[in-house]
Image (cartoon, rainbow, N blue to C red; front, side, top):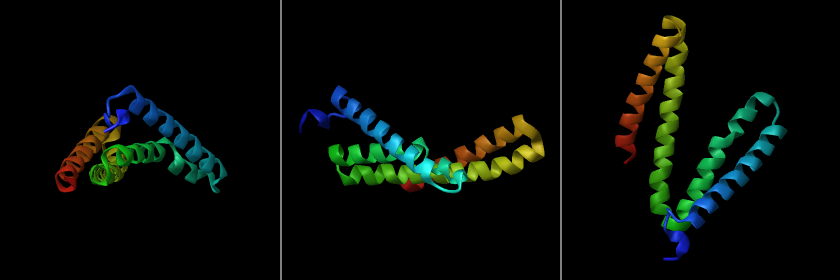
Length: 119
């Protein structure tokens, strides 16, 4: 194993930051070109940081670890979709504070179940 193989080394962390930053710029440029502009948010920082993370995990730890991380990312995305869907209804019904509590509870429940299923 080389110096970069230890995921806590300064070289690994610098590589992760550099690759993440580069991909954020690339996705931001795609977001600027996309029509209509309402789709630009799809190309924000989260996908680029996730791809940078997966690329480094594949390079350092292999595809098996990247598969586990990919499943966790999918589980988190699913939990976010459910939370946002519940949040729209809950905030309209119970206003901000209680609606946000219901939304957060929904996110935690889906994330907990998805974590068990993903691993």
